[in-house]
Length: 609
Image (cartoon, rainbow, N blue to C red):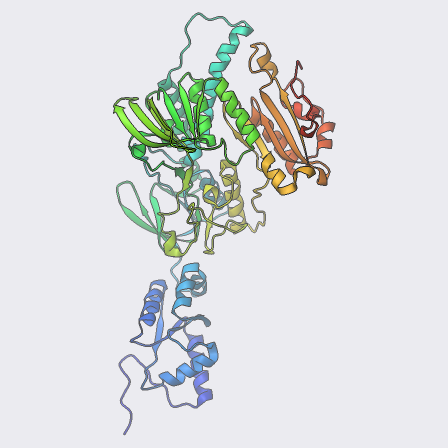
């Protein structure tokens, strides 16, 4: 009696001998773009067939236990050393079982295998950049210049007080640009005081108008926002003001302000989502406090202000608020400017204190209470000592929180595509080419784990990444010896290692630290802040006194540091500094005449030029 016919849709193989069966299986593998050997009752087989059904065409050969299934499975064991189903082949390549196939789908390798077929639906874009800040814009425009189809998705989640802004990211809207302009406003106030000693006479009482300053700064920022949009359009970069979230590999959902959703695919993605200010997590913080995200567009003068934190954002904001005449206090949990040279940080703080900023050391807020509504209103702050049970209470018009920033990575669907993040801080570990653990996803800027949080670094990394991806370049972003400046009232510029870290890495006995106080000529006539400015270089004696740390505290510190940073990258030594002729009279020239070492204990105060 002949065997019953196979179920509909299945073909019974003839009773070949072993050799013919092996040839037949290999022929099946070679003749189908996607081939899944499976069993109809297996849930893992179903998952794989569903996933491959989403990816493109599928051919599934079920192994029926009554017919040729066991024989084919034995051949598959010989071919792949895999005894389980599903057993997946794509374009002749063995992918593996369920776990291996799903993992290949997550990391993009399955899509690459599928890409060799002509019937694969192409991606919408070559590159989608998530985040329209400095780094994201630089990367997107560079990729577009190199002929790629690029999309930028950018969306600003409003602050608890409802503050939002346009294209350009933190730096342009609520960071470097407005910060430097308000710093300049404070410097102009000091310049007005100095001007009387230079012969300027004026009878009118001088006062500062907050609303006028904010309006002018916001108008300038608005022009930058528009300029970025025009630049993207000129380079044919598609821009959407929408919140991006991964929903599956190579695919994101974009949700605009009206809640409308669109879906977009790309071969590669660059994450450039940046960071947002961290809150205290205490009663009243989000309800009544502001952050730097709110300050620069605040429609009213903040009045008496408590700045909570000792980050560079905290000290910069405290500095310019005091500089325009406000009553400002800074509440510090531990140290100033963590991560920076502590001698320089303490000197910057001391200068702020001499100019009216009050420091409340070793306290942290535990409650914020609103006493009176208004613009500004009146708030009560309750804080506890970090070294005991003492309680501090104070009343302020505004409380500005500046205790740090959190990476915007936890709510964009990275878990759905398998991108790893550092669970402690939300930041993303990457290779030296800014590649995440998922090969088609890259990351740049402030969200990188262990990298510098600086706008020019993000811009450089973004441009170089695009050139490596699309122009055959091999140049990587150099995160060593990056210069930066903290725009406190007395500016602090640095490049290279803080003294504490240099001692830890090289040993104190292998270092020579040269230092000096100096008095800028511009300050001599007003007769203020004599011997307050400070400069030092840290040299590695084991490398011909190479400069491994450069630090300056004084006016125009950013301009000074930028110039010396290029020399440091070229291997600047103390001997080369000694051979350099300074420009007189400038503050920067002190680095060409510095001859007192810390180890000598000699006096470093200066008199005259």
